[in-house]
Structures are given as structure tokens and as C-alpha cells.
Image (cartoon, rainbow, N blue to C red):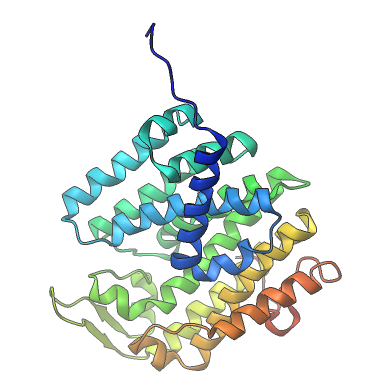
Amino acid sequence: MTGVTLRQPDATDVRAAYRQCEQITRQQAKNFSYGITLLPGGKRRALSAVYAFARRIDDIGDGPMEPADKIDALEQARADLSGLTVESAARSADPVLVALADAARRFPIPVGAFGELIDGCAADVRGTRYATFADLEHYCRCVAGSIGRLSLGVFGSSDPAAAEQLADSLGVALQLTNILRDIREDLGNGRVYLPAEDIERFGCTIEPGGQTGRGDLSGELADLVRFEADRARDWYAVGLKLMPLLDRRSAASAGAMAGIYFRLLEHICAAPQVALERRISLPTREKALVAASALAGMTRRRGRLPEQVSPPAGGRP
């Protein structure tokens, strides 16, 4: 179109947009925020923008809207990313989009990977169940492997092709941990993520209740949880091979995130029955210690979690 002047956001707009994304990350992505704070300023702001938009997508999927409205909102989020530029984001007056567009201009962030996250959230809205682990693995790659690849765009890597695969594997490990942490909460929302073949193998029942029901959990659930946790450990063992491909600060950031989630997995394994009744979380002090250890020790222990959370040896998933 001729005669139309596109508004360029000024530096104040962009700084304010990043501040809002950092606030969203601190308040709503607390486990990840410990790792993000270990990054230098430019990378910290860019990754906060990535997580703020990812949180927006998650909130749509978990929010109170009717399913059809959620699908519409997810498709609107997908449309918002199409042809995203700093100028188009400025026209929208959406600070998260402004920050994300600026971050994508500064770093090779594969913004299209958000489409996979949207696909995964749409599966949540539709109540998709997973017959086999292969089915669940695909879902995990959509909702968490995508975040790993988006993060890698900010981190950078000495071997991008290898790093992308490893970031994907680490994302699967983190998502499996999320699934084990949230079994009861997900059941209340009508969702079951654990593969039907595994539930049957251990003679368990995991069935959602009605709108207000807590659902049905029965059988050798502790054994099922430990089995899935062992599977997650194997994915951590592969995904952590990403660390030597990152610079020290990026490796510390990713290591802190992974370390916090691995510690959470260990807490779940130590008390599976508690995890089946309520959501387990790490104390703030424990998260801070893991993050500090990641920053202090990543140089001499490249490719490992902080010493106190090193996983047992495991084969490639």
C-alpha cells in the first residue's frame, strides 16, 4: 500500500516490552527463570520474550474458555507469528510480540517452532490420549522439544545440527517430568498423558472424572511412576550431551533448568504416592542452589548436571 507509514517502535517501547516479558517469566515460569537469569543481558531478554509467548500459548490451552474458543485463540496466536516483524508487532501494540520480534531480529530464533507448541496445546484442548510411548514422544517434542529448539536459537551452538537434536531430547526429558508432576492436576482437567500401553502393563487405572470429579487412580501406580521416571532419566542422559556445544553461560543456563527439573524428578521418585495426590515442587532455596552450582561448575563439568543431581548412566532412548 502506498502512502502508509509503518510505526517503528522506539528504544523505550522495546525496553518496556522486554521488561514485561521478564516479569512474566519471573512470575509464571519460575523453574526456568533461575536458568534465564544466568545469561548475559541480551540473551536473557531474548529468552524471556520466547518464554512469555510460550506462556501465552499455554495459558490459552489451560484457561477457562470453551474448547472451540481455545482453538480459535490458538490459531490467532499462530497468525500473530506469520510474517512477524518489529514493525508489525508495533502496530499491534502487543509488548510480547514487540519483544519477540526484536529478539528474532537479533538472534536466529526459529519462530516457526512455536507452531509445534500450538499443535501440542490444541491436542490438549481436544483431550488427545496416547496409546504408545511413540505417540507421547511426538507430543513431548511438540510442546517441549520446540522450546528447546527456540532456546537454542538464543544460546547459539558450535554444532547447530547436533545441538538441535540434543535440545529436542532434553525437552522430552523435561516434559516427561512435567507429566509425572501433574498427574493428579491433569486428571482433574480431563487429561491423561501416560501411554495406555504402560498403564495396562502395570495393571493400573487412570481415568478422568466428570467436570468436578477427581478421577480414578488405582493399581501399582508407584511402580508405573518409577518406570516412567527411569525413561525420563535416559532422555536426560542424552539431552545433557548438549552442554559441551554451548558457551559457558548458555550451558550454565540450560544446566540450571535441567538440574531443577531433574531434582524434581528425584523428589517424585522418592515419594510417588505423594506426587499422585498433589503437585510436588522444589523449595526456592533448593532451586537457587542448583542454579548457583550450574554456574560455578559448568566449566569443569561440561555436559553434566550439577554434581548433586547427576543422573545415573542410561542408554540412549
